[in-house]
Length: 296
Image (tube, rainbow, N blue to C red):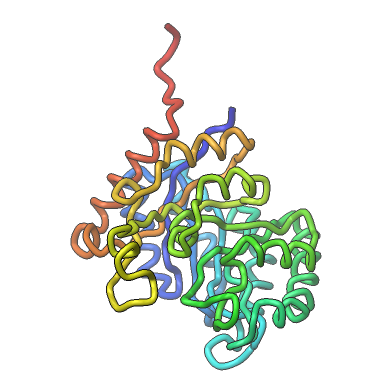
């Protein structure tokens, strides 16, 4: 059985800061790194960036799990003006980083229902899927709501399983899938485990982010009141049983990684961020099991 790896996300819009973070995470024992950009790659030379990243990761045996750009590639407006070009460049340079997966948001037509964006989604991601296939690259969509709903939003269509069906019908290519995490489903009061069991075959990457639901608040005030009812959490501090997540993934033949998405936990963050992520790394390794103890 191929070893499921545990990694973390590192932002790369500020390349020097990103490289500094890489060194810390490598020293802490993370096994994979997901490199992320927000909305734009800027003027970054990806070939040069890939060389700098490999210089840090290769001696430690750490790999790049995926390259991600999070913006709205469907509009080409404002700060998203070159998000689509970012998808294209990451696809073209994925091999330079030694990975075969590019991820991000689908984008959507602002303030329109999900269905209204599907034709534009197909117009953009149909060619992207073919471009990626020609380079042996897969594409995956993160399932973050970005505070959008079925009826309106500014960023992402791929936050709901009903939308996934529309997306995969519109672009049925086998190299298109999901970047899944339980947190974003829990925030919609969806039980993530049965969902993962149903959709594991389309999951190409997992974000290691959990959530805590305050069911007492939900039962008393619902989700439309002024009281917070949900918090993003680092794995090990939230409600999800990651033993079950790992089991479902491995039973489905998943061979990717779980990359911890930090910097969201309202309790174990800030000055505790690195220690929180290291604890999550150890916890997820325990959930994974399989450490080689030699022959009995």
